[in-house]
Figure 1: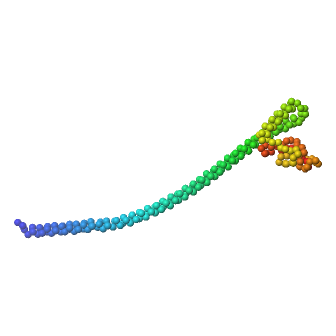
Figure 2 (figure 1 turned 180 degrees about the vertical axis):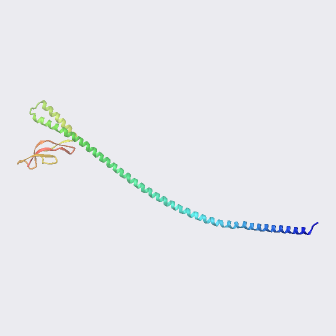
Figure 3 (figure 1 turned 90 degrees about the horizontal axis):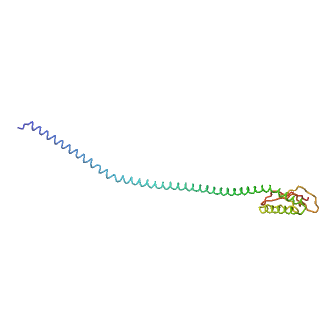
Length: 217
């Protein structure tokens, strides 16, 4: 048997159920609205992405220009280094060529100096040969043998470059002659060599001993 209280309770329960359904519908409607908002954001996103792509493209263009500028500077630097090393190589080559010439000249000078020193030691031997021949008046086999040795010895030295300086009857030249006496000689002109006391010699154009002479005033 249903009482009045039971009817009241049923009504209250129905009201509560209805209110809960209304709340759920309101929540569902809010949720639907919240779900619709991203559609607006999705429509905006492509425009933002396009702007970002434009910025990236401009950055890439600037980066390429910077790369070209950097490579150009590097090329200029390499050219400068190449020119510097080429100049150094050219100088080294010139220095080496000068060194070779200088060494060759010094070697030649040392060789000539060594030969002259040897000849300076030999010249007194030639002088002794000549004195021995002048002191021997007698024509015999001994003198003839001495003359042959002397001539062979002098010819060998002449072939190596030794030359006797002409003196008697020639004009005095201080480069080749050394005057140890002057005389008044009316028959000869002034500065003419009238007598030779010791022979002078040259080797390859260089005077190794001047001739000692008497000169007319």
